[in-house]
Image (cartoon, rainbow, N blue to C red; front, side):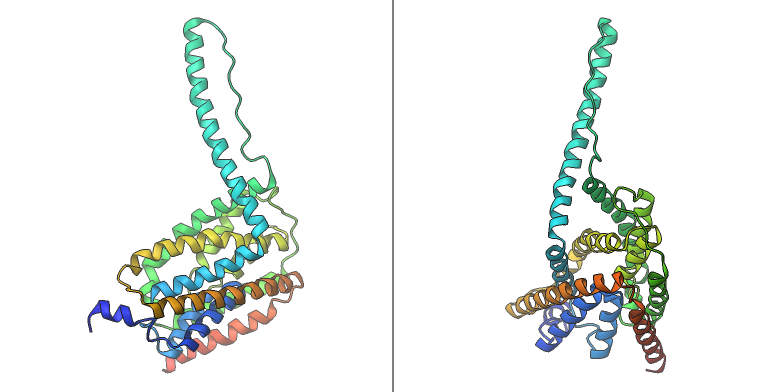
Length: 315
């Protein structure tokens, strides 16, 4: 069969119940600390859909969960966007002041007259501006690790349950730490940029199939001393540039996909279901972490990871 025709039929071959099942799984596992990528790989293996689920469908499911983050944290996100623009404006203003003052100094040396220099604006002057810059700093190591991991392992793990199974066991071990870590007191004001880099590295590692992105970033946030509620909010909001970046990165792989009305219907259903389920799961995770009840996910990751490893060896 021609490669383009195969791509054309990928989403068409999916039944509506399969679309809903993938969307529900994405909505649950994107935010609950059990790894969405790992579960999607396992489900594709279970249903025999390793080569029939298109890249664009996976991307649309992630976009659906992105809507859930916007709904839950819209007030914070709106402030961050405004303050992010403010940071850019003030940086541009300070650059202009620098070159203007340089000209003034040069003229004063020639004329022997002391001209008044313009003052610089303080760029990071509020908690939300610090928050916005922290997210930007975290996104840098995430992007670097994401590119490296994609080149190194993507083709090897997409059809194998062994690697996600091993990583799910690692996720389970990591989740043991969350309930045992002491409550931190860091808010955006007291969080350092080095803290942001460490959390960004954790998010980059969380892109591996079987490693939970939310679990790794929240664990890292609490480990560096963040308040639990801030660590949760930081984890979800910093997922926005990561998901958008991943979607943009996958655009090149979508160029051979010829979408039909049936494809668009499946995408729409998948996005809506993933968004609705994701919204509920965000609220659930916030309550569980606040009450230190993450141990249930630890046992779950151990169980599913062990099953995946055993099945990959036997089958």
